[in-house]
Length: 428
Image (tube, rainbow, N blue to C red; front, side, top):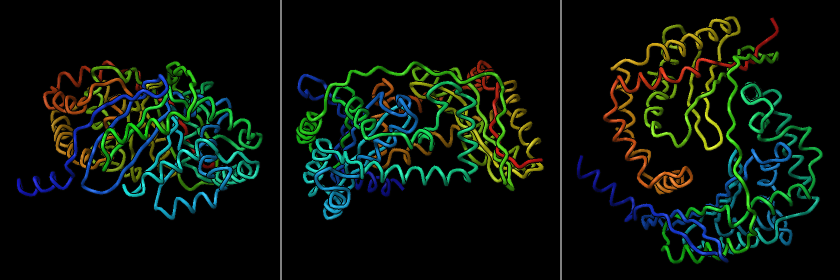
């Protein structure tokens, strides 16, 4: 076994440990999360723009539409010719938007990476700002949104966000709605890209068969194209504690039950490691979790039931879901409330704690075996203002976590019993 592990380590690639470098780009210090790995002749680069996701949209869906516009290639080439150039060199170039950040990702064989950088620079200098391009992506988005009218998971999930975060940017549909997409203009997307994608809010992640000096040169080439945008982070958004229930009546054969509650734990809290264990035991581990055992295994009310603590820079809350027969809807909802109440009141058992420790510590190598996993972890540590190696330190703390400590932590978070629900069901 030791011999096999040694071979795997060697094959993974003569990899350097993760590092954070900074490069000066026209007077702006741009951070680079970097790791070299020569096992495969591949290079990837991701540019993450902070304070630029859906939370900052002046109209719901704008960030997502901006990402789709960048997928339409350059104005000079058009979408088809630009996509052909990418395909001819087996280059992947894409953009995406989450709640907090906007990302552009480039990956290819090492031999084609310079060509990929060339195409990325062309895209940033000359996006396909044409009416044909925006009409195309609007038709696609409206078609997708129309399909979601019969996607009951989507409806229930959106209903939960609207209930937990009513009146805030988190309460909107991240993808937008037909009413917000239809009036969107080319100037709206131009303004988003020019005011949200800047060199002063960029974090660059580079990994693969490339040296740090070359990586820095590429970052300078690419990031120098971008303006200064001077953005501020969104204020923290608190989930409601009002125990509300949102109901959507649809022609469905099942009840879709999504639930959530406030969770008073900031991303910078030193007790994050305890939260990770509590999350695993309550609903994050699949079979063996409280929710799955009580709802599926013991009562057969649902095929699956999950929950997780979502802790970001801008919000923190409990979120979960299950799907059950219409006649079991009321019982399943009440059971979720009962399970969470008992979890907070009585805590966990030593058996549950031991099982959680064994899995979280034992599965760590699987969460750190690929280059992308390692650089993503290093990026997350930087993004959340944590020292490199933070996750390893967390595992040490998990290993020494006592039953008294975790139960004291759980009992201090009574706010998660203030559950709100979003349910898609049939007319009774």
